Image (cartoon, rainbow, N blue to C red):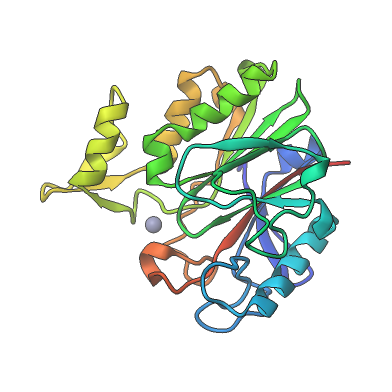
Length: 268
Ligand SMILES: [Zn+2]
């Protein structure tokens, strides 16, 4: 069991003990333990979904406190379902942590060699976590179907490699997100995968022009193809759409729902 549920104070979240033991704080929040009201109940950390900003900031504070990182050392990007990502450092501390306006524009991935806390937002899309022990670098990436079709996970590996990192010793984690049990897509989505992938065994035809899409498997294949060792890939295999008591789900709840936080920070 690579991923583990953990409760501390009012918060319940998922983490990977192996990463914790290596000095990497990796987390995925649940909807439990926050201040937001229906339909954002209760730990919504997204400022962009129509929730009361006061409640969202209180929720974020609880989440940052849990990791022992002040908001001035947290960095947030504006996610746009693209494949851009960026190296951040001490100068970026606080960007997007308490407001939308200062988030790093148009990036779906954040990487750092510092102890800054990197946070991204999810409600079905796939959180990808990275740790390159040789660089002391960590990263978090937001991979929905578009990002996965466009192989954002492999683009992240390339960023680390360009900085001198060795992918054969890299650690990767695939967090809670919509699973192959619940994620039906149409031909328009399927064709994007067929265009970009040699094989698409993660698309299962339902016979009516619809497919069940396994984003966990698609992302795992991307990492294996580039040389990440299978024993260094931790897949949560936890479906956000199946667990309404724990997770927000865009597919299940529609546009008016909250966001969970994906988090990574290297110990200072
Ligand atoms: Zn499911």
